[in-house]
Amino acid sequence: MPNQKQTDYNNSCVTPIYQNTVYFFENTEQVIQYHENEINVGRYGRYDNPNWLEVEKKIAILDNYQDALIFSSGMNAIVTTILTFVQPKDKLIYTGKCYRNVRKFFKSVLPKLAIEVIPMDSAETQRFHAEFEAQSQEDTKIVFIEAPSNPHLYLVDLERLKSQIGQNTLLIVDSTLATPFNCQPQHFGADLVIHSCSKYLGGHGDILAGSVSGSIELIEEIRNYRNMMGGVVAPHGAFLLNRSLESFEIRMKHFNQAGMEVALYLQNSPLVEKVFYTGLDSHPHVDLAQKYLTGHGGVVSFEIKANQESTSRFVDALTIPFMGSNFGSNHSMVEQCSIFTYYKLSAQERQLLGITDNLVRLSVGYGDTGVLIEDIDRALFETCRV
Ligand SMILES: *Cc1c(COP(=O)(O)O)cnc(C)c1O
Image 1 (cartoon, rainbow, N blue to C red):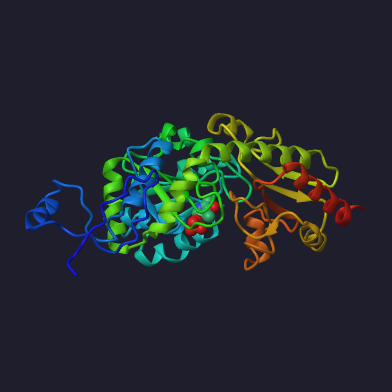
Image 2: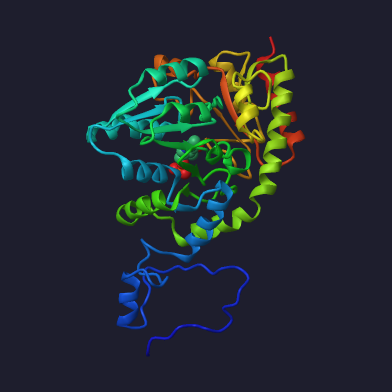
């Protein structure tokens, strides 16, 4: 049979999934026009996909940048972006309290390329900026900030930081926990903003993807690396992410409200020692939160009045949240940090990261928040009462 292309009924309101590896050219002239950037046609599935473009346009608008790219995961977005810009002997400064595999990448991979990596503690803002000042800025290529941070939701004074760094230093912000709905790092001088779309942007616990937003020039450089390294999101994943973005604002309104409700409940519970939620006055960075955030999301971390064993009993007694390490999805999730994400660390390493034995990270889902609070209340009463 000759090659044929389906042209009927392709006026679907929803963009179809381009589940293809390769694109055809009409003739040799088109191939040359493609090479000369005169026409927008696809070439190969690692470079081009219409489902990506749809998502990338939306994320660029949400983040308020000229352009954006999506990747196979948040980690891949970070790794590809960093590798695009570093050279041997460069220095990279980062918030030491950040996503586990980001820390691992900085500590175990970048030194192999003769890149100096320097973690800095963002928990105490004054000290953070003073220590930052003490670093030579000449050779600092990248400052990588995770804010709000995992799991304490620490923030960084981005504007002040921007005034401290040199013109040739890239300020990159992992804004996964805030999302574009609650924070706009672009307004405060970030050159690139990264999200793990596996969390709030995907929003249904069924997609792995990541994104980076920035100027046309920076995004073009990163695109060259993505083309080469191939950390691309599958067409179906991009399709699902596009669907998710349609309800993004509605879902974030829910998360902000539900997170606040749970945080207020916990703050008032006599069985809870400390709550980390940027919407509460008790958060150490509440001033920064007022400046940088317009909402506080669905992740609430808290320390209960219990030792490690009783804290395990508490998370085991919960019936509504799944025990697992994720946030921003339809299911509420809970983890005892010292036993879950930070299990493999020594007691001393956990202490440095502020991971206490009684620290719990809860992320709210789309279910009834009142029912979730009742579940927490019952579990606390059963396991922590003295
Ligand atoms: C989840 C997460 C990542 C990694 O994203 P993946 O999509 O899981 O690869 C990076 N940074 C933060 C803050 C995250 O929460």
